[in-house]
Amino acid sequence: MTEDFYDEILNVSTCGDQNGFNKIYHYHRYEATPYSALETLFETYKLRSSDHCVDFGCGKGRLNFYINHLFNSTVIGVEMNKLFYHDAIENLNSFNKKSKDKIHFHCCLAEEYDITPFDNRFYFFNPFSDQIFITVVNNILRSYEEKNREIDLVLYYPSEDYIYFLENNTVFELISEIRLPELYNTNNQERFLIYRI
Image (cartoon, rainbow, N blue to C red):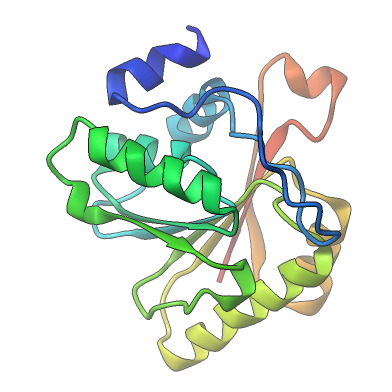
C-alpha cells in the first residue's frame, strides 16, 4: 500500500516533504512515521480505548489519527512548528471519524507540555536532542510520582543516547523490540523499542 492509502481512508493529508523547518539545534527535522511501520508496530502492540497517548513532534498528526482510528484511544499531539500544528488542526476538521473529541493538539515545546495524570503512552520518533528527551522523560517520571500508573515509552528509530539514558538513569525497563521486516537487515535503527514503568 502507498503512503496515500491511509490518508485517503482517514480523510487527512499527512504526506509530503517538510516545509518551514525551524533551524533549532535541539529539534530534529520532522518526518512522519511510515504507515507500513505503524502497521508492524500495532500488529503486536495493542492499545485500549482508555489509553491516553502523547505524540511528541506530531507534525500533521498521522500517528494521532491512525491510533484513534484503530483503537479509539485519546491521542494528544505536541508540535512546536506552527505550520504543522495548523495542518494537524485542518486534518482534525476533515478526519472522517466521530470520535474527534478524543484527539487534541498542542502548539508548544515538548518540555513545556503539561503531562496529565491520564497520559500513559508516549511516542517518540527521535524528535529532539537527548537533552530535551531527558527533560521530557523527567517530566513523565514526575507525573508518575504524582499518580502511579503503567506508562509506556514507544521509541521509533531510537537513538543510542535515548536508550543509554533510559537504561542507566531511569526505572523504565525494555519490554519489547519490534523490528521492521526487511528494513532492519540493512539498518538496525528500523525498529521500535517499548519501555515500561
